[in-house]
Image (cartoon, rainbow, N blue to C red; front, side, top):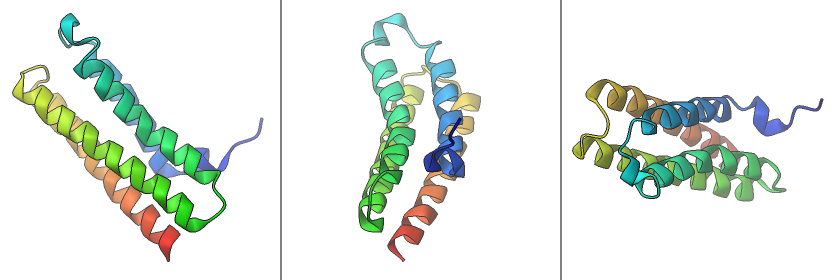
Length: 119
């Protein structure tokens, strides 16, 4: 079976770990958030890895960097929703810190990838 270039990216692998964490954490959210915050968080988190995958199929470094930037923006969306979740007491402090540290690691990796694409 062929391994695609995005599957080799460490940042893509990290973003998959974030997806798993978000799914696990949002399973504990109130049921009335199923079509609200749970759905938003999950879709934004999936968007990080999806845009990385899509970006690797692009022909130019500038275009690849654009998709990396979209991934970064999705990570910021996840962080914002995570902060809201904490404010609404849907997430405990331990899980909040754990996921926030994952996001920080991913955004640092995305910045490095984007800089290499634009160099």
